[in-house]
Image 1 (cartoon, rainbow, N blue to C red):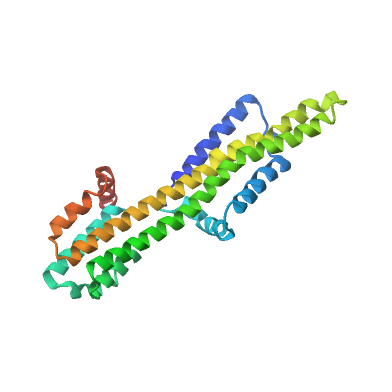
Image 2: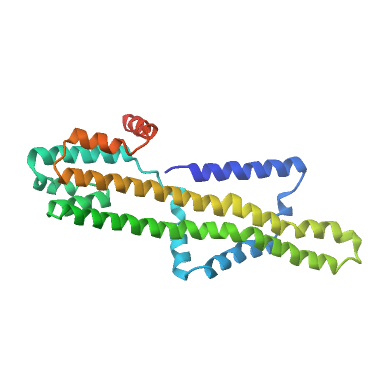
Length: 259
């Protein structure tokens, strides 16, 4: 598991709590049911209204991925493709049928089986590219949903504050309660801004980043399969695929495998 999301949120909320402690603000002062309800429930409702219901369902099914997904190791994929390419060149493409069953990457395994079954290279490219495009579009729905919540939340927080201020103005005859009431009124704005920038937008960005990495890995598999099918030199295949990955990532992958 890549702890980036949990670590980042812990640091961000830690900074908020440090500021609250420094200013002498008690946690109970901002954990008010009304502001929390209008921001989170209101943002969710607006997000659902802005798309299809299945978009929201898919987004929440994908949500755990923002916290548990592990960045794919493209270096490992390259090594697997080079190994398969070397064996295919020595023994022929049909010799990979047994090896294909041991490939954990579903995309690579399916593409390899299609190549073994004699799929035309252009047809194979089209089929695999379509799968990548479909995945990218589906992932965009999930990240876009949380980004939309991040866009709605601050404005809905302001709506909550305006509603609370209306209540304050109705009670101007009781000056002793004006201070706490005005402070409570701005809690909705606080949660609107906080939830957008510390929860919804980071989750949306995280899901998009994971999707980009996974699609990039699939593109490496695609190019490797086509080179393998064409009988290219394994060394050339490896160099070609490594050129598609940042050098720093390859170094990190090698270090992880060594460990």
